[in-house]
Length: 246
Image (cartoon, rainbow, N blue to C red; front, side, top):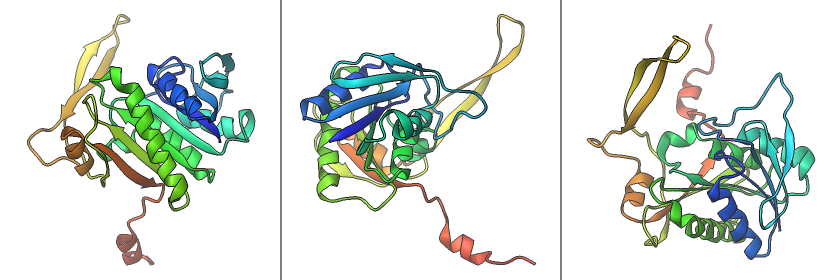
């Protein structure tokens, strides 16, 4: 199968290399369209008002690769439109750090995969615990297993299979889990930069005193998780309740 691979950690990220190796080893033809640098937390944003710089790159196992001066969604959109229109599926990752719970709303990894899903192609995002950079290959193999499953049992149209791999040497299993609201202890730290300007830096961590999203709970227990995500964020009952205002 012809597969387009992207990410939000950038073209040189080890997780991207691991995913390409895995897909190539399984006999797939891989094209990489990835950002030329770190683009985490860009969600599904697109670059408007300036052109995208595209430079050829070399990644072992890919038939061709491009480093693109844009967001992850830019990369997939440009890839499917111009650079690799023959792609039959889209993978995004392996991301450095989980994309679970409501973090998926901010994730460039998810944004890239969702851009693929909106094109009507099967799309999968794969992320790994930030504490375990040595298990990218295991995460990639898990993503391949999940992909083979959705090829046999297709998801509804315009959906993304979101996979996360836990912080352990070998996951206890690959299980489905819904997402819920994540609670953070966050603060903006006021600083002054070298130019004397006031800047604010966001710091924080997941709040440990309340129940976390089911997928995070399973990841903490050592399971890899799968969640099917969809673009439709409509709250149907609330929308129906305001059908007309006069």
